Every structure is written in structure tokens, then in C-alpha cells.
Image 1 (cartoon, rainbow, N blue to C red):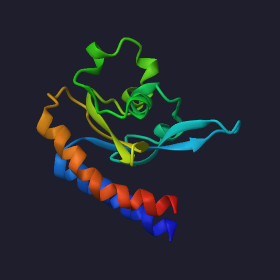
Image 2 (image 1 turned 180 degrees about the vertical axis):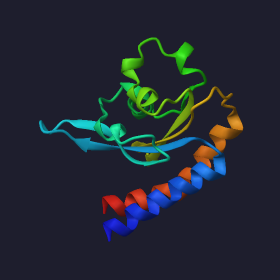
Image 3 (image 1 turned 60 degrees about the horizontal axis):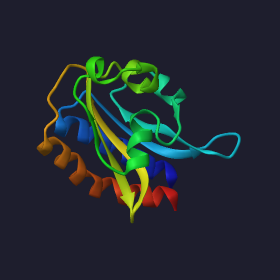
Length: 150
């Protein structure tokens, strides 16, 4: 059953990427590291350049997904080269060569259960309608994440 849900999530990410005309879509979720601490990992992606995203492990408050996880608010970067001082703190921008992106929290009640990111590999203005569209898409993803978590 989990495999079927995972495939639905991947198919939905592909659909989102095509619908929003973004270069990359990613879904980050909580995981436990070997010490039992909660970390954030990019679990599902669409149109990745390589598999290095799988090695990215973020703490709450660090990186794009970590900031969104901590604040439970959308986070926008319009020009990574100008907006990010320490690119090492934003490894996804390096591994996927993202320049402009928006990430939003997927909430279960008031708790963040995942982060959805849509990104561009060229500079692009991220406007409110784009963010609103990302938010509206969350209504399709949330039930799948609930099903995945059982």
C-alpha cells in the first residue's frame, strides 16, 4: 500500500511541476537520524538533476525546508545568488542549481508535516498568485501524506 501512495505522490509532483511550469518540485518530510533526533529530508522530487538531494539532512530552522518547518510560513527566494549569504546553509540550491524558489508548509492541524518547494533554475519573480497556487495544491497532497503516515 505504501508503494502505491508513494507513486501517487511522485505522480502529483510531476503534475505540479508541469502545471506551475517550474524546473524542480520537492517534498521534504521529517525523519529520525541515528541518534533518534528529528531531521528534515527531501523525500520526493520531480525533475532532479542528480540524487544528491537524498543526502541533504536539515535541522529545524536550517535550509529552506528547515526555515519553513520552524516558522510554518511560506519562504521565497527570488535570486539565490543575491538573497543567500551562505549557500552552504541552503544545499538544495547548490545540488539542484536553483535560483528562484518558493517553499510552503503542509500542515496537519497546526503542525507542519511536510514542506513543498517549487523552484526555477533561472531568475524568476515569485508573485503571490504563484504562492497561492502552491498553497491550493497542498489540499491534494495532504491526504496522501496522511495515508503514508498511516
